[in-house]
Length: 190
Image (cartoon, rainbow, N blue to C red; front, side):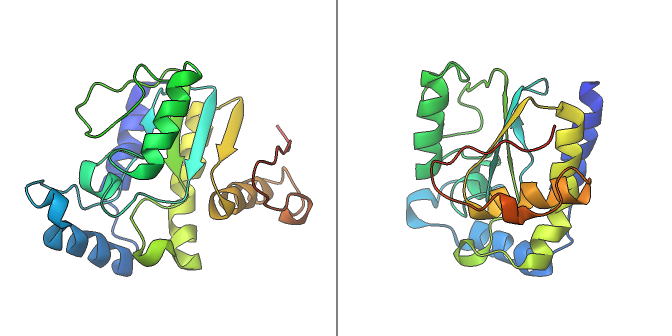
């Protein structure tokens, strides 16, 4: 896969303004800031995927955290979820270091790419259905470009978004056969 195709998609994502509610929210969070990060220059726009463009594993989260990726510009960087995720990726050999606090901290993912169901931090971590639909083509394009061997969905919205993609592509008939449950392994078409 030519890396420039993923670069083009990344620019399209970071320039996206399809969801006025989310655009306003991430820009407001970037302006008001959390006290602990008042000296930071926040990213404050949609966050692209991060990792190895030749990944065999794609991890799909819900969305950037308001004071995590919305601040740093890199998925799961600078938030508590990322602290846990990057430590586990490091232990499994997918990351060169066990933590990530800043986008320029030297973290490299090997054979893994982290994406999200939506690319802007949603208020109260609750995206609207149309916001998920607006972002779905970005995830679909990433998966088509990367062609992973496995997908790990972190949470119900991430799983349902991925299943909706499979359904839209005719690879599954319905999400019903794949209900969300914590620590559950599913095998779908592929």
